[in-house]
Amino acid sequence: MRTIAELEAIARERMEPAHYDYYAGGAGEEATLRANEEEFRRRVLVPRALRGVGKRDLTVEVSGSTMSMPILVCPTAFHRLAHSDGELATAQATAEAGTVFVCSMASTTAVEDVAKVADVFWFQLYPQSDREFTEAVISRAENASARALVVTVDSAVHGRRERDHRHAFHDLPPGLAAENMRDATGRVRDIEMPADLTWDDLAWLRETTKMPVLLKGVLHPEDARRAVAAGIDGLVVSNHGGRQLDGAISSLAALPEIVSVVDGQVPLILDGGVRSGADVVKALALGADAVGVGRPVLWGLAAAGQEGVAEVLERLREETDTALGLCGARTPGELTADLVR
Image 1 (cartoon, one colour):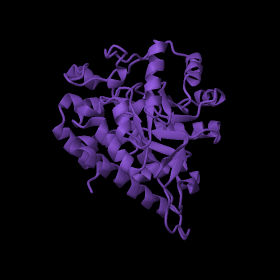
Image 2 (cartoon, helix red, strand yellow; image 1 turned 135 degrees about the horizontal axis):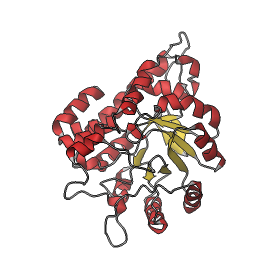
Image 3 (cartoon, one colour; image 1 turned 60 degrees about the horizontal axis):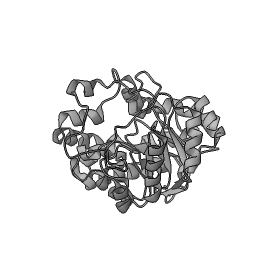
Image 4 (cartoon, one colour; image 1 turned 60 degrees about the vertical axis):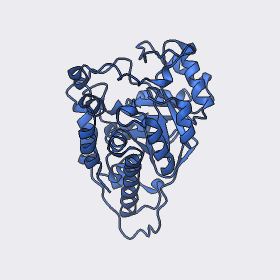
């Protein structure tokens, strides 16, 4: 079984340079992109002994969805840049792994087609200034049997990504489109990231759908506190993979304070920098209920399609099981913060 680093190297060879850099790059000088991984490296695990761990059970339930392991595939755009099968391959491999695929609003495969191969999937939304269109997108996701709505709230302004500017990468190649952005006439709209969105818009969204609503991109504890008070069903502690504000706090560094504020009232997912099962265990021990992985899945997809995605997820599952047992836990819920230094 290949390492994630090995799969990334293969992906880099196979992809157009502009497309590889679109996935790999971050905002500004990419300090936050690096910090996401460095924060995991900086922290170490302190294993426990003689705990009688026996057979481990990695199963978790988050926001009404049961997952075979505390790892889900977080939303990433334009999978058909990596492989011609795109999101269908990713969703199929994720379904076979028994976990959740979060379909991006910027998917190059329509949510209705994703639903045909995904057992349990969630849908990621950038709220648009046109509420009627936003409601139509949400209805498409609901009708396709999405189990939750993941609302990205860290994108009031586009982060400046130097790699994209260097390649002049602004548009998808001919034949590809953000299929979930088609309106009733079949026209593909540009994805807006309106700067004037407020908590009032969130209240409207909450009333628009019966799906659980999770906020993605929460780093400040006061935003976490306010989200819980507003009745949000879950939070994704995330800095958008270092792609928005360079110099922002790493996701893992932000986690403990948010855990303290939320105090178990809603589930917490962390994404950004997770590259191994040890990373998964560190995040869970510090209070996350699950983690999301993005770039590793894209590297697997680019390297070997559906089989590559399956390889990444299986490797993370095996590493997580090993780290869990060596830390003296049988289930993710038995991990505690004293295991991390």
